[in-house]
Length: 315
Length: 259
Image 1 (tube, each protein chain N blue to C red):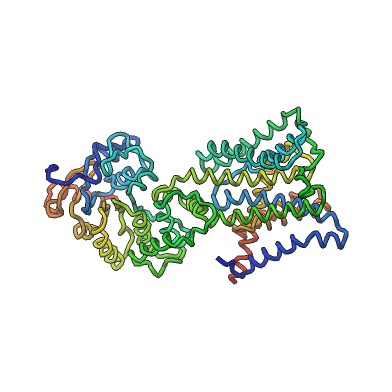
Image 2 (cartoon, helix red, strand yellow):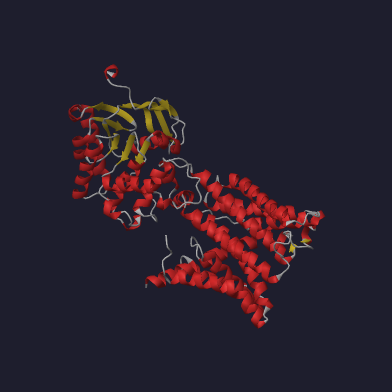
């Protein structure tokens, strides 16, 4: 399917181009801050995109998605602290542990629906948070400094600002492409069908929960990758990245940008983190403004910013 | 009499389902023979939908047994029964509302075409799924409406789509729960004509309130009252059955009383 030319796709294409060219702008103007800011944005966009896979396409309102940010991050941090600096080991471990955690909590929480599902995913993420806080060998509450970024045998230098940015961007685009393929595949159609009408899907012969669970694991694994990137970005990982407010941030990004829209979470992450950054220059109560903005979006723009753009192109 | 009939495709044996103090299915036994169109009728609250839901596995019985194609399916979940060839349409239309008509049907075809743990290829480009779906849509007269989103289809079209979805699973037995519900006169007539065609290919259990349709279509009729079978036989015998007359007369009173 060739993407149709409309406002939302045009915005997505322009954003992609801008993201790719950002380091050039940064180099020309000498504005390093914008590059570090957008590195962070790309990482959170990847995390939000993975949440969108289960929340937007799968109808699973997970309120514990930030747990994978921490798990991916701690996998990198702990291995680094134990003297294993190779990214070829750290990253696969980060993905594998995230997948395993998703499998475990998915298998238990997917027995429930609605509010119970939200609460149980939240509870599991909080458990991960407290376990991390108790890891006194790895900093406990204070967190763990990553003294050396993941080493990829000279292929790519993560300490180089531009290279690291492009790595994050490549992961984001790769993640989005993967999600796009999944959403249009047999598997993706089943998952979306279950969101729409579970009973119907069972009646025509699908074991709904099996598909939900696999989707849940894929999303967790992608978010684990974002966690590994985040630990490298901040050279630090602490229990705070798993705190429930972080999961809330990810949800807000998805809703703001547009649930069930491929590019929505990217737009959501950009708008949310930019607003947060801008507002923090004027006030320490940025939530006072972010809150009402979110409220307006939810009330008047179902489908978020991408939904709004979609309606514009239809006139 | 049972000896002269071929092996039943579906056999229900002493089925019981209670909801609190109400026995919705009361020691119910019945058989469906391959190739027949078997209608189930009964006044409101006779437990027809509860029975259908137990046959397809949405509701589990308290006791009793359900055999399908010679196999005990009493405890099988609904997705497994669907794979054995049991399909149902819902009394209240139950479709994937935000999907197009053809997506709804293609998913049903997909469910019976191996597993769906395929993550890469575009499912909407799989020719044999699309072709099967298109054929089922043509079958029910929705060929030209394939790409319309379900929520944009008329009620009558949604009823027809329900049927196309069920057909796409290539069922051995089709359980239709009031396919005529809410249809206008012309639409009903079209549905009856459609069912007349379908009955040549597939065994059908039809739950329906429209008596004219039932007597025009059915080979045999089972009459339920309060979850119990009070009569079972060919339409002519049912028409003359005293107990059936009484039950329906009683229901009439009930209707006027409440209405």
